[in-house]
Length: 427
Figure (cartoon, helix red, strand yellow):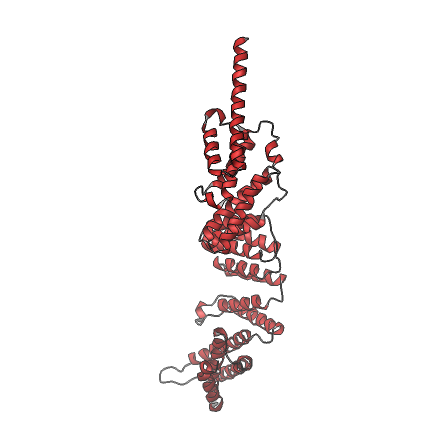
């Protein structure tokens, strides 16, 4: 019994000594003697007997938190804020009863100081274009925020602002893989709001073009579409991904599906028509697919829908003219292929066929003219043009020159030659 009593008395003496040591440290902390308090608390916890002292760890958190906020001593302890956070976590782990009395008495000030300190430091770095340290501060800020939510000290389920700026700072400092992690947190939660659509677009492009991961790209495309269904980006990128697979039939099905959902999208319909025509028409007849005529007809139909919806769509008029013109070229090639044998003459039926073909050629060229003239009417009277519009205008003039040369109309030929030669000067 005497031995047991002595042991209990010794333990009480140790606890009393520990409390006295912490009192001294806290007095230095209150007096803003941060360097002394830091040395003392580090020594205190370095003692094996104090290593599991919850109040010791809480005191350390408070000391390092104050150091992180004092410019005169913070530079000598650059990781003070993180050390304060880790010390708080240790305090929570060692608090046997889970009551966290000291933290509650302080109204959670130390953890809030750590959170706010990281946020302010991140914002200051970001505004000064110091994106790498900004990323580190926002990343740490998020770690604190998530811990607070985990402990139910905060009612913020997702700290979207911090996540967003962690991602942006990572991206701006060249850490695209890190940026993807933070942007994905937002997209996976279907976060919406002004400007947030760009996060989904960034992820689609990042995974498709940078990581060569079409499955993940498709995931974020669908997420983006579900949150921002009216944005034109999804349909365009979905088509790009289908196009890259190289299956034209599947690509055209995708176009039909997109247009079924958005029939007034003239840009998509125009692109569909052009791709139909490019697939159906090859300069060499032997290279054309078996359904060439069907594809060209469908291209023509869609282009006409484009100009019904948007009468000033110059590019659509140009392609409509090219369809008629190229059909005339095909007929002309057939005409040229009908030749008499060496030293002989054409048969009557061959002469008749050539005459029919010449008439059909004229019809096709005549059908093309109004479309090319419409391009001239839309673009020719304007001043400075975009490069693509300038190209459309030159192509229209070039084909009109060829047609009027074929017709022998020197007046029209000369007029369009002058317009062609002056495109770069005028536009």
